[in-house]
Image 1 (cartoon, helix red, strand yellow):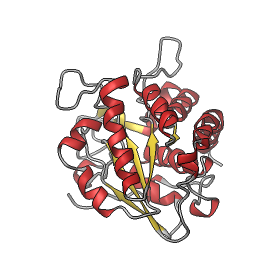
Image 2 (cartoon, helix red, strand yellow):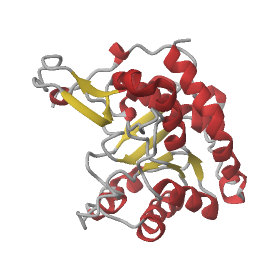
Image 3 (tube, helix red, strand yellow):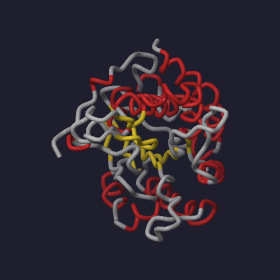
Image 4 (cartoon, one colour):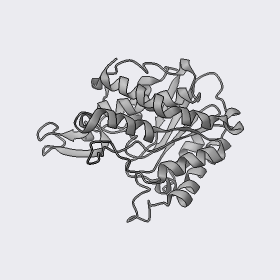
Length: 276
C-alpha cells in the first residue's frame, strides 16, 4: 500500500465512526438500497465536477469515484464549477436530477466552498439558517423520489498554520451540515474531517502533489504555473474519491460488494479528460 493510501485509511479510521453513528436514525435505516444496479448522482461544486481537456490536469473527485465502485454502479456527475447550495438550486440544476432519480439511487450532496462567498449574494448562505434550508431541499427531493440522500462535508483546502499543521477553512458549514444530518436522519460522510487529517499527515510539501500546484511549463494550459490550494491534480482527486467510497461503505450506504480497490493503488495516469 502506498504512503498516500495508508494515510487515507488512517484518516478515515479516525473520523468516520462519528459519521457512522448518524445512520442510527430510523429514517436512514428504512432507506437501505435494494439489490440490483443503481446510480450515484453528485450535486456539488468544482471540487467534484467533471473537467475537460482544456482544464487538464485539474480533476474533480467525481471523475475518480467510478474506480472505487463495482461495475453494477453508475456515477452521474452533475457537479458544476462555482456553484453553492443556493445557486445550484436557483439555476434549476436539481430539477433534472430529481426527474432522473429512481428508488435505490443515491444523491451525494456536497456544497460549502462557494456558500462562504459573502460578497456574492447569488451564492452566499449562512451556515445555520439558509445553508441548512437549501440542503434540506436536496434531501427532501431525493426522498420524494424514493432515492437516498447522502450529505458530504466539503473537502478541505490545502492550508497550513505556522506550526505546520493543516487548518480548517470552512468555518461553521461542516458543523451545520453534521447537525442537519443528525436532525433529519440523513447519512453523512465527513470528507472535511478525513481530508483535513490526510493533508495534515502529508504535510505542506507532499500535499502539493495532490493539489493543482504546477511549475511553469509543466502544463500547456498553465504556462506560467499555478498554485491552487482548492482544486486537485489526479492524485488528489483519486484519494478524495477513495474517502467518499470508503465512507459510503463504512456508513453502510453501500455494501462491501459495491466497492473495490479501497486499499489498492490507482495510478494517476488512469484519469482522462474528454474534449471540451
